[in-house]
Image (cartoon, rainbow, N blue to C red):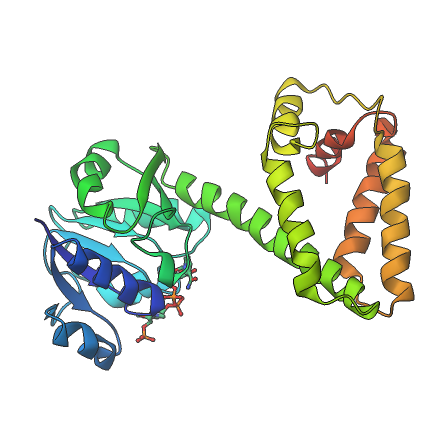
Length: 285
Ligand SMILES: NC(=O)c1ccc[n+]([C@@H]2O[C@H](COP(=O)([O-])OP(=O)(O)OC[C@H]3O[C@@H](n4cnc5c(N)ncnc54)[C@H](OP(=O)(O)O)[C@@H]3O)[C@@H](O)[C@H]2O)c1
């Protein structure tokens, strides 16, 4: 079993330390606010006086600034840092150079699960950075989730992570708008939820509603057939949705923005194509 130092003991870092311990690793913990380590120490974790303790440092903090603040001027010779904190791809690339300048290696990561899911089936994490460093520690990192290495560019893990979050937050916000709209008509959110779940399943499936597969192919080929469901028809329908929300006295910022995007793609000559043609307008802001 390996030795792991967990830096950052918010809800995620705490769950990670517990998952490493459950997998039988020797866990040392460090947090800016030391008292947050108490429960883990009671369960057998060691408390580090300095964050740069040991060879494998796993970091889960608010952002990358927290890593700089925590490590300060510490040398990192021979150490591998695996940072699962949120940042921008540019910040991750800068951090990789910063760690290398102190003699260490940075593996960047984006974990796709909330604290109760850490170490549970279905959890997965995107990793990027030097492949040899990732490979060396992949077995240990599997205590947190399934591991998916996406490439050497240190920014890539965050790009995948943010791409997933964009879908996650958009989908959940659209569900809140939809549920609020139906609630105005007396339909409880729990009565509507099965239909929303069904739709998500269909979108992810391979049938005629399997739009994630269909769109991925169309985006790759640059051909967006709209014979059976034109973008113009969908822009008009989206306008009706916005009007319905407004009539119901609900907030419409996000649905209006969607409608504007569809209408712009139509105005830019894509009305007869399919919905995937919207990507042309997304790529030309
Ligand atoms: N929670 C989730 O559902 C979830 C899911 C996936 C990914 N994430 C990501 O995981 C990371 C951790 O999230 P979290 O929910 O555990 O809580 P968080 O509030 O994002 O992070 C808390 C941790 O960051 C530390 N911290 C913040 N600023 C610091 C600084 N300047 N110097 C040193 N330490 C600092 C805190 O130390 P103190 O205890 O001393 O304040 C604490 O250990 C975030 O980047 C988040 O985006 C979260």
